[in-house]
Length: 257
Image (cartoon, rainbow, N blue to C red; front, side, top):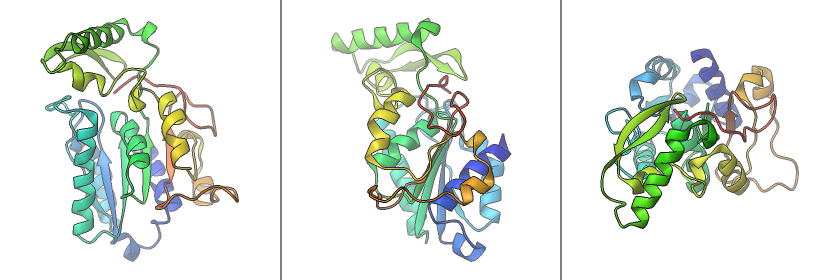
C-alpha cells in the first residue's frame, strides 16, 4: 500500500511540474490528509520519505479524525487545509501539492476545484457514499439527519451511523455537519458527483486508476489536448479507486473510510 501511495504522489508531483531535483524539492510543500477516523501518523513513513527527499510536509489532524470526527462542517474543515498550505508557503515553499486518501482523497478533489493555492492534488482511494441500498444504516442516518434539520434541530448533537472502511460505525455529530459530508446534493457525497460537478471546472492532466498507471506513463503523460483551457495553477489529478476500470476516471463510489 505504501508503494502504491508513493507511486500516486510521485506521479502527481511529476505532472504538476514540481518533481525534479532534490534542490528543487526544497521549495515544494506537500499537505497530507488522512482518512476518516484516521490520524496524521498514518502517513508517518511517507512523510519521513518525502522529508528525506527534500520536501516540506504538513499532515494536519482533520475534522474527520478519530478524536474529532465531524466537529465542524466540511467547508470549515477545508479552511484548515488553507492554513496548512499557508504555513508551508510562509516557511519557504514556492509550490504546494495537497494529497489525501479515503475521506482525505475525496476532500482534495473538492479542494482542487474550489481553491487556487495548490500546484497539484493527489486523490488516493477516494471515499464516496456507496449504493445506499447495500448500507441501510447509513441510508437511515441520512433520513434521520434530514428530518432533524427540517424540524429545526440541525445543530443538536445526535448519534448517527456512518461508514468506516465499509463497515457501520456510530458517531455523534450535529445533523447539519453530518449532511455536509453526505447526501446526493453534496459535491463530496460521491465520486460521481465530483466527476460531474467538480472535475470539469478544473481540467486534469491525468485521470486514471493509479493501480493501472505505470511509472513510465505517469512520468511521460502529456498536457491536455490543444484547445483545452489550462488551469492556473495546473492541477494534476490522479484518481485512485479500486472500482475504477483500467486507465479511466474513477466515477463509481467506494465505501467511505
